[in-house]
Amino acid sequence: MRRFWLLGLLAALGGCGRYFAGPLHPSPQQAASVETNDDGSLTYALNRLEISLQPMSDAQLNRQFASVSAQGAASTNPYTFGNWTPPGERWTPPRFTVFRLVVSNYEYPKVLIDPLQISITTANQRHYQALSFAQLYEYHQAYWQGRTGQGREQFKGRTELVRRTLYKDEVVFSGQESEGFVVFPVLPDDVVSLQVHLAQIAVRFNYAGQPSETTSIDFAFEREVFRGNQPPPQLVQQP
Image 1 (cartoon, rainbow, N blue to C red):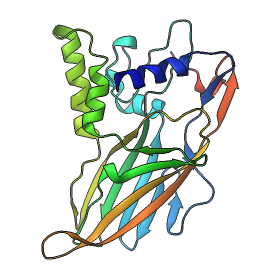
Image 2 (cartoon, rainbow, N blue to C red):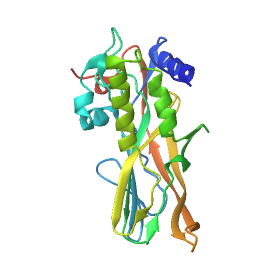
Image 3 (cartoon, one colour):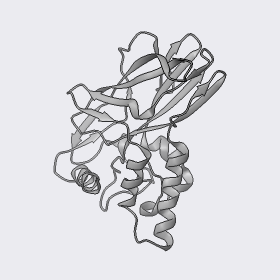
Image 4 (spheres, rainbow, N blue to C red):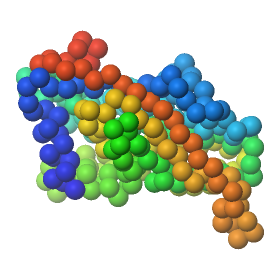
């Protein structure tokens, strides 16, 4: 696992004529009952059940967790590298692919979405499953500098923030809302369009509390990928 992440980071930083991926945004064509919102999110509406998915850029995540994103290499934002840039660079590589999932249930007695049943399928037929807390814990453990003192506190800070903000595998009862992040690995440079598939959304349950009716949703996103020796101005890390 550690080798996978480190190789991915090296690949993002190395080479000439590099690729620089822009942020994800909704594709023009969406499935029925899916609407595009002004904030770049997509919302699926089934009567009074609404499920929204928003791709989160690193800039958005840094603003949301500003207090842990402005210490350079010591930043402890678990979803980005904060305001750190590699030596001699003006561009910060992405750490993950992150979406915010919001569920508003005013239709059914209860609804259940298992975040680990959420997946990405790209236009060039790559497949990715959402990462679990255990996988993110292992990832950040590889960045743990030392086992005591400041390194330990940074590791604890990152993993506790992940624990609090990941979308939880919990029932959303009638009249309730739930939200959290769904996290995937960094997408390869050749990915320019994709579908996020929310599978086995339970909307009705039997007497034993097991799902008796489920549905699924596809959200379509795309992005622009730039190539050159330097990133385009819109992707340059601001001081």
